[in-house]
Length: 317
Image (cartoon, rainbow, N blue to C red; front, side, top):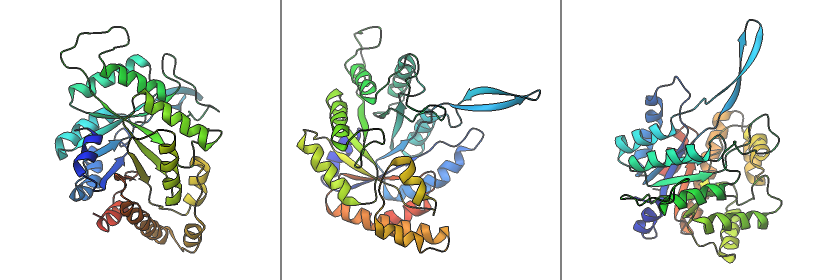
């Protein structure tokens, strides 16, 4: 079932969903199941599975370092299929511009269709560590809008090199990212909203936001989006604060502001176990306010750990 159909079926009730990261190569999928199992009592209608792009690694050979390109966390589509089968829930693979050609993207989408996966999250992806700015993979897309267009074209029966008379046309529900405090590379929030509108006009069906810790940022973002004609569901993305280093790391990486009350609470913690509890309490407070405001869903960034998300969900669902 499509994410938008789940939202419609909920009839105004706020949905619970979460996002997981594939394990590193060599790790068992059982570790993933162990983190997902405690969250299934809250009946998530869908689970997002991230995709990691390629990385440069250096291997020592005869005293010299040789550069190799590898993917440390492959298996997004396989995990989606496994979760769909094990838990009988919908899965949402993340499809990236970075690291993939248009042809590879088309093959991935065809595989999704054969596996009965109805939803995809279309993202540009991160800049590689050796790049100052994002660069398109040769033969790939530079912007998420282009990726959305390709997926939407496939929904119309338009393949990259052929327009086919198809018996079973794809019908993907397309999710995209939104940034309540603007994308870190955007010159302004208003400019970033224009880019979001372009993705919606290209065929995006719903939006999931980047993390934020001040709900007013989300409410203002949704109001501004509606003002320029964005009327698809916008699901807030919630990340529980977990370690003291997040005070520096999250603003540095995601260019977000942290509320003074949260900063003070974290700075008053003696260790990360106390920080984790502060993060749980803050996320519960955030989630309750958003739920009361009637948001279509609450989407949690679990980062492979479920204990804090379970505590939060237990207070709401």
